[in-house]
Length: 281
Image (cartoon, rainbow, N blue to C red; front, side, top):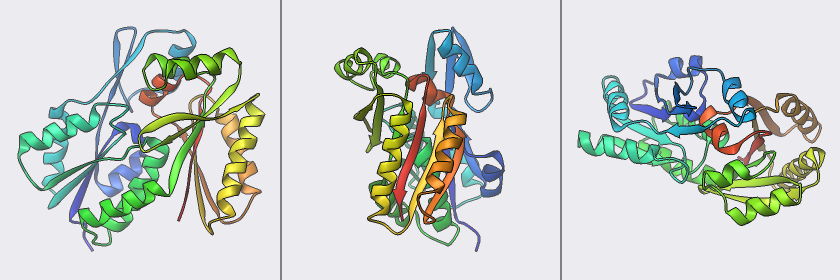
């Protein structure tokens, strides 16, 4: 069955190029500005943002223009009857607003723009599941209904070295940042429904890993099948170790390491980043 609905997503979801080509997805990139030099997300190595964070260089990010979304929408409409556009959480970026403005300019009801209220780890999963439905003939509204259900069935848990970078970008309160840093703890944050909050404080990275495993086990006690996607900024070794330990918990866990998260997201989180999408089916 030939799919009738095209898909446009922004670059922060970090889809694999082979997957993008196979599914005919249009990617609209965000940008990162490091000390005044502009880089396109997806066209430079993630290690570059790590070095910039280590050197405490000035880092800013830039959302796509409405024109970039217009081009992506028009390209998809050459091949599909309708277009579904999924963006990262509008609480983190103006990307959703740019996509919505592009739809308004084109003045068509063949495009639907949806705020996923999340970022790459959960977003990657939502895109995969959406394509499963779309490739089997589902409508846009049926797909959106499924996305909303899956969003309720999962969330992101992540840790970073400290909360200063998040506080400076306005993504977390100054009080939470101060409390976390003054106590020299490793924060564990939850990202759900577009909101970031501190959910746990640990003494050291091993305690963070123990907490994440307990959360996975708790969900396993309630659900038959659990999904865990792992991503990181500069914690590739720890990500592999976590994957190994999660494998030991239960055979009914679908676990994958997605690799480094988007430099756009890394710029706002800071160093020491490691996170999981934890959900169920």
